[in-house]
Image (tube, rainbow, N blue to C red; front, side, top):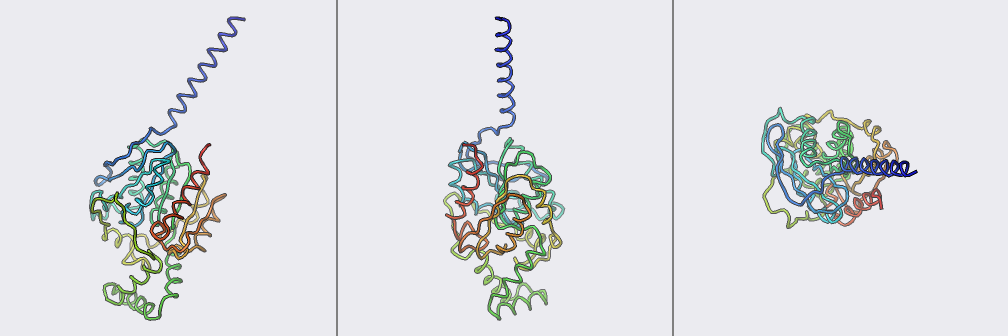
Length: 320
């Protein structure tokens, strides 16, 4: 009897050790707030960790292409619960600047995300993308799904043709003079005329950032976007696609997503609610939130509701 009891004790102890070791292998090391660089193909990318909360980290992918992560400073309060990881994609912001078109392929952007994940030792994390960053988030998930616990698609872009169709619909709501300026500029490929530039500003004011763009005390360094990358991959304006992404379409790939997913868009977003609702219908058991009064810059136009949408979704996934 004594021998049997000891055997049981040893078996229990062994099982406990295995569980602990297994859990240790799966969990992400506690991340510390700060910033740094990671070497990738073509240069180095800059990243910053906001907050040191104990819950699962949130990795955020900015828009563009050629944009920066500085709008994500508006989500800094989420760092009270979890580390919020932001970074500038290669070529823009505080990452290495370049105009090397051989680097401007979707797969290279995917590998930048993977390099950052590996460098930080992320085993489990949530993935958030905004605008072009949603396409990047989907591409990353399709190649490297391991460890991604959930995805947030904020103001999503998955198809150039659908984006262009949405833009055309929104343009019809603008004054006739603005519509004519856009039509003339696109017909003549004259994107530098005063009339076309003014039309672009009117479009942006209605469907981009509708209110004053917010700043942050955390944004202490000049970090500009890369217009060359934006033009090369996308085009001269949000409503004129002429770059290498002109035939991009990953809509049907949404059906393959197996993790909890949240779709967010603004009431007046370039990513129109009706289109985003369609995207959401393709992902089983996904959720949809519309940000009141917001354009594409949801974190600027209605910061409080945007943060609440993200926080409520993530909180619902955490084990209490």
